[in-house]
Amino acid sequence: MRILTIIFPDFEEIEFAAPVDIIRRAGLDVTVASLTDNKLVVGRSNIKVEADKTIKEVNSNDFDLLFIPGGPGTKAARKNADFIKFVVKFAQTGKYVSAICAAPLILSDAGLLKNRKFTAHFTTKPELPNSLTDQKVVQDGKIITSQGAGTAIELGLHIVKVLCGEQMAQEIAKAIMY
Image (cartoon, rainbow, N blue to C red; front, top):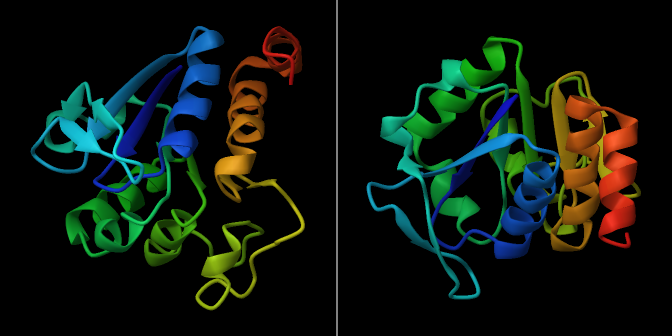
């Protein structure tokens, strides 16, 4: 299984790092791609992360799950029409798509949340009134969403459970004392 994670300026570092760390502990291959032409991306807390590639250098067919962290930079990412098309194309192949915090807004823009159960950060409620704010992680079909930085570990473990099984998720949870 191969996972593609997209980061952009002002992404939420915890929402990126915790799930990616947990997914890699499960032995899955994670490629980090920058939404910009610059591989060095600065998050909301001024932590610099060097992506493996830019989004222009990846082929969505090479991946089984697309993961998008949230953060203040989600607002600008939503304005990138090519990125929205990329998300739509990825989802249309029947693969998993996961988003956390404000990033479910991107999924909404891509039309992926219609008639689905999902969750997101409480600040998105005006645009996502059907968000299930009482659930940390929600999966509906191949769409997996989570609320925010405080639920990032749970999201990572859920992704591992879906892709690798319950036992692997439990082993990692035990190892990290979750």
